[in-house]
Length: 289
Ligand code: AMP
Image 1: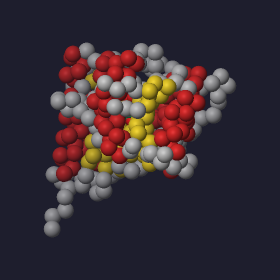
Image 2 (image 1 turned 180 degrees about the vertical axis):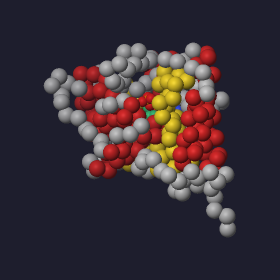
Image 3 (image 1 turned 60 degrees about the vertical axis):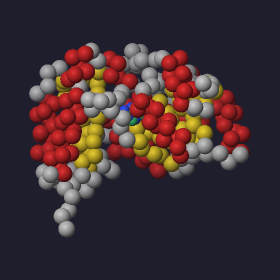
Protein backbone atom coordinates (compact mmCIF):
# COMPACT_ATOMS: atom_id res chain seq x y z
CA UNK A 1 0.00 0.00 0.00
CA UNK A 2 1.36 3.41 -0.88
CA UNK A 3 1.52 6.06 1.79
CA UNK A 4 -0.41 9.31 1.59
CA UNK A 5 1.66 12.40 2.17
CA UNK A 6 0.13 13.86 5.34
CA UNK A 7 0.49 17.61 5.79
CA UNK A 8 -0.76 19.97 8.47
CA UNK A 9 0.32 23.52 7.72
CA UNK A 10 -0.65 25.82 4.86
CA UNK A 11 3.01 26.09 3.82
CA UNK A 12 3.34 22.30 3.66
CA UNK A 13 0.34 21.88 1.35
CA UNK A 14 1.48 24.66 -0.92
CA UNK A 15 4.99 23.17 -0.90
CA UNK A 16 3.72 19.67 -1.73
CA UNK A 17 1.73 21.02 -4.67
CA UNK A 18 4.19 23.53 -6.11
CA UNK A 19 6.13 21.07 -8.26
CA UNK A 20 3.12 19.21 -9.72
CA UNK A 21 1.57 22.60 -10.44
CA UNK A 22 4.71 23.78 -12.25
CA UNK A 23 4.68 20.55 -14.25
CA UNK A 24 1.16 21.41 -15.36
CA UNK A 25 -0.53 18.52 -13.54
CA UNK A 26 -4.18 19.12 -12.72
CA UNK A 27 -5.14 19.01 -9.05
CA UNK A 28 -8.43 17.60 -7.76
CA UNK A 29 -9.63 18.42 -4.25
CA UNK A 30 -12.07 16.64 -1.91
CA UNK A 31 -12.84 18.53 1.32
CA UNK A 32 -14.24 16.37 4.15
CA UNK A 33 -14.72 16.27 7.91
CA UNK A 34 -13.34 12.72 8.11
CA UNK A 35 -15.00 9.57 9.54
CA UNK A 36 -14.78 8.48 5.93
CA UNK A 37 -17.14 6.08 4.16
CA UNK A 38 -17.94 5.00 0.60
CA UNK A 39 -19.70 8.33 -0.06
CA UNK A 40 -16.45 10.19 0.48
CA UNK A 41 -14.57 7.61 -1.57
CA UNK A 42 -16.91 8.24 -4.51
CA UNK A 43 -15.68 11.85 -4.47
CA UNK A 44 -12.07 10.65 -4.33
CA UNK A 45 -12.63 8.32 -7.28
CA UNK A 46 -14.33 11.07 -9.30
CA UNK A 47 -11.30 13.27 -8.64
CA UNK A 48 -8.88 10.54 -9.66
CA UNK A 49 -10.82 9.95 -12.87
CA UNK A 50 -10.79 13.63 -13.81
CA UNK A 51 -7.49 15.01 -12.53
CA UNK A 52 -3.81 14.07 -12.26
CA UNK A 53 -3.38 14.38 -8.50
CA UNK A 54 -5.89 14.22 -5.65
CA UNK A 55 -5.78 16.16 -2.39
CA UNK A 56 -8.22 15.27 0.41
CA UNK A 57 -8.69 17.48 3.46
CA UNK A 58 -9.99 16.33 6.82
CA UNK A 59 -11.04 19.17 9.08
CA UNK A 60 -13.94 19.19 11.52
CA UNK A 61 -14.76 22.86 11.04
CA UNK A 62 -15.91 24.49 14.28
CA UNK A 63 -17.47 27.53 12.58
CA UNK A 64 -20.14 25.47 10.83
CA UNK A 65 -21.47 23.96 14.08
CA UNK A 66 -24.00 25.76 16.26
CA UNK A 67 -23.38 26.09 20.02
CA UNK A 68 -25.70 23.15 20.81
CA UNK A 69 -24.58 20.92 17.95
CA UNK A 70 -22.28 17.92 17.80
CA UNK A 71 -18.83 19.49 17.22
CA UNK A 72 -17.26 17.77 20.24
CA UNK A 73 -19.01 14.44 19.61
CA UNK A 74 -18.36 14.40 15.85
CA UNK A 75 -16.57 11.10 15.02
CA UNK A 76 -12.83 11.47 14.49
CA UNK A 77 -10.66 8.56 13.31
CA UNK A 78 -7.61 9.89 11.52
CA UNK A 79 -5.72 6.59 11.40
CA UNK A 80 -8.59 4.66 9.79
CA UNK A 81 -9.25 7.57 7.41
CA UNK A 82 -5.62 7.82 6.43
CA UNK A 83 -5.45 4.07 5.71
CA UNK A 84 -8.55 4.27 3.50
CA UNK A 85 -7.09 7.16 1.54
CA UNK A 86 -3.77 5.34 1.14
CA UNK A 87 -5.63 2.30 -0.21
CA UNK A 88 -7.33 4.58 -2.76
CA UNK A 89 -3.97 6.00 -3.85
CA UNK A 90 -4.70 9.57 -2.69
CA UNK A 91 -1.62 11.75 -3.08
CA UNK A 92 -1.92 14.36 -0.33
CA UNK A 93 -3.92 14.45 2.91
CA UNK A 94 -4.29 17.92 4.39
CA UNK A 95 -5.33 17.68 8.03
CA UNK A 96 -5.01 21.15 9.52
CA UNK A 97 -5.62 21.95 13.19
CA UNK A 98 -8.12 24.61 14.26
CA UNK A 99 -5.38 27.26 14.81
CA UNK A 100 -3.98 26.54 11.32
CA UNK A 101 -7.36 27.35 9.75
CA UNK A 102 -8.34 30.03 12.27
CA UNK A 103 -5.21 31.64 13.72
CA UNK A 104 -5.85 33.79 16.80
CA UNK A 105 -7.47 37.05 15.70
CA UNK A 106 -8.93 35.69 12.42
CA UNK A 107 -12.29 37.44 12.03
CA UNK A 108 -13.20 37.41 8.34
CA UNK A 109 -16.31 35.43 7.35
CA UNK A 110 -17.86 34.66 3.98
CA UNK A 111 -21.62 35.34 4.00
CA UNK A 112 -23.47 33.51 1.24
CA UNK A 113 -26.72 35.12 0.07
CA UNK A 114 -30.32 33.99 -0.29
CA UNK A 115 -29.49 30.44 -1.42
CA UNK A 116 -28.27 29.80 2.13
CA UNK A 117 -31.26 31.32 3.90
CA UNK A 118 -33.85 28.54 3.74
CA UNK A 119 -33.96 24.86 4.76
CA UNK A 120 -30.75 23.93 6.59
CA UNK A 121 -29.80 27.62 6.64
CA UNK A 122 -32.91 28.42 8.64
CA UNK A 123 -32.55 25.43 10.96
CA UNK A 124 -28.83 26.01 11.54
CA UNK A 125 -28.13 29.77 11.73
CA UNK A 126 -24.54 30.57 10.70
CA UNK A 127 -23.94 27.05 9.34
CA UNK A 128 -23.49 27.99 5.68
CA UNK A 129 -21.40 31.02 6.55
CA UNK A 130 -19.05 28.64 8.40
CA UNK A 131 -19.06 26.22 5.46
CA UNK A 132 -18.45 28.98 2.91
CA UNK A 133 -15.66 30.52 4.99
CA UNK A 134 -13.75 27.27 5.39
CA UNK A 135 -14.29 26.16 1.78
CA UNK A 136 -13.09 29.50 0.39
CA UNK A 137 -9.99 29.24 2.59
CA UNK A 138 -9.35 25.63 1.54
CA UNK A 139 -9.79 26.47 -2.14
CA UNK A 140 -7.35 29.35 -1.74
CA UNK A 141 -4.80 27.13 0.04
CA UNK A 142 -5.03 24.12 -2.30
CA UNK A 143 -5.91 26.07 -5.49
CA UNK A 144 -7.27 22.98 -7.27
CA UNK A 145 -8.51 22.83 -10.86
CA UNK A 146 -11.59 20.91 -9.75
CA UNK A 147 -13.22 20.43 -6.33
CA UNK A 148 -15.73 17.66 -5.60
CA UNK A 149 -18.80 17.93 -3.37
CA UNK A 150 -21.50 15.33 -2.71
CA UNK A 151 -25.10 15.84 -3.74
CA UNK A 152 -25.85 14.35 -0.32
CA UNK A 153 -25.47 17.91 1.00
CA UNK A 154 -27.40 19.37 -1.91
CA UNK A 155 -27.90 22.86 -0.47
CA UNK A 156 -24.22 22.99 0.47
CA UNK A 157 -23.28 22.13 -3.12
CA UNK A 158 -25.53 24.93 -4.45
CA UNK A 159 -24.15 27.39 -1.89
CA UNK A 160 -20.56 26.58 -2.85
CA UNK A 161 -21.34 26.88 -6.57
CA UNK A 162 -22.82 30.32 -5.95
CA UNK A 163 -19.99 31.49 -3.68
CA UNK A 164 -17.38 30.32 -6.23
CA UNK A 165 -19.19 32.18 -8.99
CA UNK A 166 -19.73 35.36 -6.97
CA UNK A 167 -16.11 35.48 -5.77
CA UNK A 168 -14.57 34.53 -9.16
CA UNK A 169 -12.92 31.44 -7.72
CA UNK A 170 -11.37 29.67 -10.73
CA UNK A 171 -11.89 26.12 -9.40
CA UNK A 172 -14.58 24.10 -11.17
CA UNK A 173 -17.13 22.90 -8.60
CA UNK A 174 -18.37 19.40 -9.40
CA UNK A 175 -21.27 17.54 -7.77
CA UNK A 176 -21.14 13.77 -7.20
CA UNK A 177 -24.29 11.59 -6.82
CA UNK A 178 -25.32 10.26 -3.40
CA UNK A 179 -23.95 6.88 -2.31
CA UNK A 180 -26.52 4.85 -0.36
CA UNK A 181 -26.53 1.75 1.81
CA UNK A 182 -28.31 -1.31 0.40
CA UNK A 183 -31.56 -0.31 2.12
CA UNK A 184 -31.48 3.16 0.58
CA UNK A 185 -30.25 5.14 3.60
CA UNK A 186 -27.76 7.80 2.43
CA UNK A 187 -24.28 7.16 3.80
CA UNK A 188 -23.30 9.71 6.41
CA UNK A 189 -20.69 9.98 9.15
CA UNK A 190 -23.60 10.79 11.47
CA UNK A 191 -25.17 7.36 10.84
CA UNK A 192 -22.65 6.20 13.46
CA UNK A 193 -24.87 7.87 16.06
CA UNK A 194 -27.84 5.62 15.21
CA UNK A 195 -28.93 2.70 17.34
CA UNK A 196 -30.41 -0.31 15.56
CA UNK A 197 -34.02 0.90 15.81
CA UNK A 198 -33.04 4.43 14.71
CA UNK A 199 -31.16 2.98 11.77
CA UNK A 200 -34.27 1.05 10.70
CA UNK A 201 -36.51 4.12 11.15
CA UNK A 202 -34.10 6.21 9.04
CA UNK A 203 -35.17 4.29 5.94
CA UNK A 204 -38.38 6.30 5.85
CA UNK A 205 -36.52 9.33 4.47
CA UNK A 206 -35.44 7.73 1.20
CA UNK A 207 -38.74 5.86 0.97
CA UNK A 208 -40.66 9.14 1.13
CA UNK A 209 -38.27 10.84 -1.30
CA UNK A 210 -38.47 7.98 -3.82
CA UNK A 211 -42.27 7.95 -3.63
CA UNK A 212 -42.22 11.70 -4.30
CA UNK A 213 -40.00 11.35 -7.40
CA UNK A 214 -42.15 8.47 -8.67
CA UNK A 215 -45.41 10.36 -8.14
CA UNK A 216 -44.04 13.35 -10.07
CA UNK A 217 -42.86 11.13 -12.92
CA UNK A 218 -46.33 9.56 -13.01
CA UNK A 219 -48.01 12.95 -13.41
CA UNK A 220 -48.49 14.48 -9.94
CA UNK A 221 -47.00 17.93 -10.52
CA UNK A 222 -48.65 19.75 -7.59
CA UNK A 223 -45.67 20.42 -5.35
CA UNK A 224 -47.76 21.07 -2.20
CA UNK A 225 -49.42 17.66 -2.61
CA UNK A 226 -46.00 16.06 -3.01
CA UNK A 227 -44.68 17.86 0.11
CA UNK A 228 -47.74 16.76 2.06
CA UNK A 229 -47.34 13.12 1.06
CA UNK A 230 -43.69 13.13 2.16
CA UNK A 231 -44.61 14.84 5.43
CA UNK A 232 -47.34 12.30 6.19
CA UNK A 233 -45.07 9.33 5.48
CA UNK A 234 -42.20 10.67 7.61
CA UNK A 235 -44.36 11.84 10.51
CA UNK A 236 -45.97 8.38 10.67
CA UNK A 237 -42.60 6.79 11.50
CA UNK A 238 -42.01 6.36 15.24
CA UNK A 239 -38.78 7.93 16.49
CA UNK A 240 -38.46 10.30 13.51
CA UNK A 241 -39.08 14.02 13.98
CA UNK A 242 -39.46 15.85 10.69
CA UNK A 243 -37.78 19.23 10.28
CA UNK A 244 -38.70 19.95 6.66
CA UNK A 245 -39.77 18.14 3.48
CA UNK A 246 -40.10 20.23 0.35
CA UNK A 247 -40.00 20.11 -3.42
CA UNK A 248 -37.85 23.03 -4.60
CA UNK A 249 -36.33 24.41 -7.77
CA UNK A 250 -33.15 22.38 -8.36
CA UNK A 251 -31.08 25.49 -9.13
CA UNK A 252 -32.39 28.22 -6.80
CA UNK A 253 -33.80 26.02 -3.98
CA UNK A 254 -36.90 28.25 -3.89
CA UNK A 255 -40.18 26.39 -3.32
CA UNK A 256 -42.16 25.69 -6.51
CA UNK A 257 -45.92 25.44 -7.06
CA UNK A 258 -45.69 22.97 -9.92
CA UNK A 259 -43.07 20.47 -11.04
CA UNK A 260 -42.51 21.73 -14.58
CA UNK A 261 -38.72 22.00 -14.62
CA UNK A 262 -35.96 20.10 -12.79
CA UNK A 263 -36.73 20.11 -9.06
CA UNK A 264 -35.27 18.52 -5.96
CA UNK A 265 -37.06 17.05 -2.98
CA UNK A 266 -35.20 17.90 0.22
CA UNK A 267 -35.77 16.43 3.68
CA UNK A 268 -34.24 16.90 7.12
CA UNK A 269 -35.27 15.02 10.23
CA UNK A 270 -34.09 14.03 13.67
CA UNK A 271 -33.74 10.29 13.98
CA UNK A 272 -32.82 9.37 17.54
CA UNK A 273 -29.68 11.34 18.41
CA UNK A 274 -28.84 12.31 14.80
CA UNK A 275 -30.01 15.05 12.47
CA UNK A 276 -30.15 13.46 9.01
CA UNK A 277 -30.65 15.05 5.58
CA UNK A 278 -31.35 13.50 2.20
CA UNK A 279 -32.66 14.49 -1.23
CA UNK A 280 -33.55 13.20 -4.70
CA UNK A 281 -34.06 14.68 -8.15
CA UNK A 282 -37.72 15.27 -9.02
CA UNK A 283 -38.39 15.65 -12.71
CA UNK A 284 -41.60 16.58 -14.50
CA UNK A 285 -43.52 13.74 -16.18
CA UNK A 286 -41.88 12.81 -19.49
CA UNK A 287 -43.68 14.57 -22.34
CA UNK A 288 -45.47 12.17 -24.67
CA UNK A 289 -44.85 12.75 -28.38
P1 AMP B 1 -18.57 15.54 5.27
O1 AMP B 1 -17.33 14.83 5.68
O2 AMP B 1 -19.82 14.93 5.81
O3 AMP B 1 -18.48 17.03 5.45
O4 AMP B 1 -18.68 15.32 3.70
C1 AMP B 1 -17.62 15.64 2.85
C2 AMP B 1 -18.10 15.55 1.43
O5 AMP B 1 -18.56 14.23 1.16
C3 AMP B 1 -19.29 16.50 1.14
O6 AMP B 1 -19.12 17.08 -0.14
C4 AMP B 1 -20.46 15.57 1.20
O7 AMP B 1 -21.56 16.01 0.44
C5 AMP B 1 -19.86 14.30 0.62
N1 AMP B 1 -20.66 13.14 1.02
C6 AMP B 1 -20.97 12.76 2.29
N2 AMP B 1 -21.77 11.67 2.28
C7 AMP B 1 -21.98 11.35 0.98
C8 AMP B 1 -22.72 10.34 0.30
N3 AMP B 1 -23.42 9.43 0.96
N4 AMP B 1 -22.69 10.33 -1.06
C9 AMP B 1 -21.99 11.26 -1.75
N5 AMP B 1 -21.27 12.24 -1.17
C10 AMP B 1 -21.26 12.29 0.17
